[in-house]
Amino acid sequence: MSSKDLAVSVRGLSKSYVIAHNMNRPTDLREAIVDRFRHPLGNGGQDHEMFWAIKNMDFDIRSGEVVGIIGRNGAGKSTLLKILSRITWPTTGEIDIHGRVSSLLEVGTGFHPELTGRENVFLNGSILGMTRREIKQKFDEIVDFAGVEKFLDTPVKRYSSGMYVRLAFAVAANLDPEILIVDEVLAVGDAQFQQKCLGKMQDVARHSGRTILFVSHNMNAILQLCERAILLHQGQVVMDGLPDEVMKSYVAEPKTGSTVDLRNHPNRDPSLAPALQSITLCDTADNPTAVFAPGETVQLKVSLKLNRRIINPSFACALHNWRGERLFAVATYLSRAPVEYLEGECLLVGRFDLPNLVPGKYMLEISFTDSFDRFIDRITNVAALTIALSDYLGVTHPFSPDLGSVMVRSEWEAFNQGTLVSGSGNSKSD
Image (tube, rainbow, N blue to C red; front, side, top):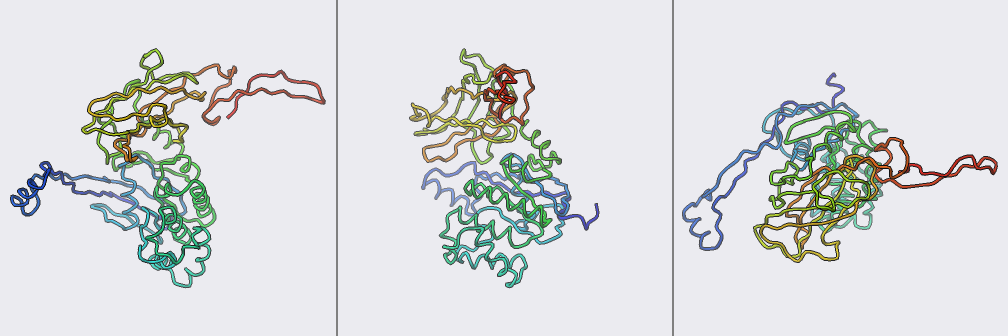
């Protein structure tokens, strides 16, 4: 591939951070004062660790290519995009970028909070190297897409997160960058605006030939938008190929078996402590199993270890299909008997009825929050649940994920000039 065909080239890219662990942190004012006198430079009891967010990464992206970057929390996705956007610099390695880059990362990146929406549009355009005349030509289109005309002359520090994202995306997508970088920040917007953004990116990719790098946990959005996907794990590229193939590898990672040890689960949110200890799937007879029939009842046993009392906690469990689409969720706060408190070593036991799911493998996600909806622990793709083949539809036709996720019985009759030409029976449906 010639350099003229490349939009982005990454070679040996690594990024490290130094993390300090304070092993003897003061617990009251007296200890804090004594610690300050003993260690006036503030290094008392600290242990330093080198953390590699990205390690020896290599890949090329062609001009006009739409690439999805996927991976678990902590895989290095956001760090990579920040390096490509020149917000932070790599520790080692080289990146070559051919073209003007526009980025939409965290809410507010590139916006000055004291400036109005109007002023920030011109500021961002100037950062991208556009003239005032070029920005004016795109201005009405940006404002119309963002839908914030009423607040255009209000300082953006007073915007809601949704308004911030709408204006930021409108600026990033409409100011003619050669390379558009979009992080999971789109999840802040409402569902209607997310679809509007995906439509805009599709339009940008198909008709303007611009390069797009898109990070999302929405697997359907990746499949809908991207022609290629890169899977990251612990800061390294582990797979690069067609989106559906990469996606199947990505969702095939959950632990198998009826009982899963959660203490060192690889899919835990790295910013959270391991409160969730283990999870066991059982049938109604209390037999451990990870295989169920459509519509069967699942019994869930979750052990926790807490270092403090949690008042009005909430445990939630969601089921996802192979595309990463959430099919349903159950939670303690949605039951008739919410949990009053949990403390120390404890056990949660829940039961729920499965829908009549299409046979295949599904993934569980679990989370534990406090009364303020703050995550205490959260693990994606924690375990696999298999729906066995059944005669629910009364037919022998093979099943396919393309049928959707839920089986629905139906009956059909065909008439030819008023004469019944088929028998009624069951048929497959989405």
